[in-house]
Length: 246
Picture 1 (tube, rainbow, N blue to C red):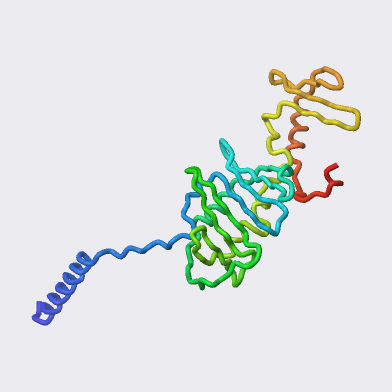
Picture 2 (cartoon, helix red, strand yellow; picture 1 turned 30 degrees about the vertical axis):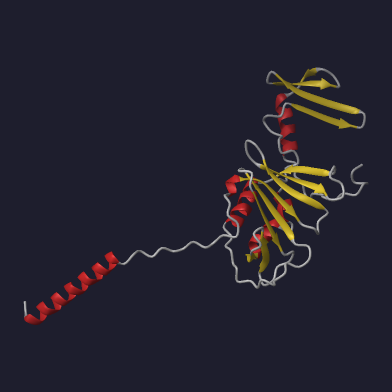
């Protein structure tokens, strides 16, 4: 090996040794995770209340046991007028996860205002603790101004805020007219004017109880149950007129 080649080889070896030593001595860079707007685990949320002053009712989501969620709409002017309906579980999980991952962006002037009629979100956790957040009723530049219960002002992406408004949880409701209808159905009653057909499953077989007592065709009854289960809701009337309720 020539002298020149030997010097080059020794130089490269020295450089590699120096770089290796630097890599061993230099501490590993750790990325600091962004501070979150609200700190909570979606799996520990028991109830979520959405209070939008522009709506005539309060929206309350409640976790059901053993699984699932339901939505209760309660009239502001009459607490005894309310409706409860099951929700699509995946829609609730998606919204809660998006809110839990929303970063805190404090690049907001302390004088900033939420404006009139802010929407309030309240989370009730399994531990008994609660988290509260207010957000502006309208977006600005693709984001909404929000304020946490600690008084911190931040900006929330409209894609996340819109999950809870416009129309929010109302859109997460199951569209199945009779959600519990299926293989476990044990009784069917059909009424037309003054005529009633009542079917009941007894010891695994379907029987007619009204207008006469007799055996029923199991296959036809199962088809009837399947038809009822397939009935879908096209649109919820959340604020029906008195005439609609008659």
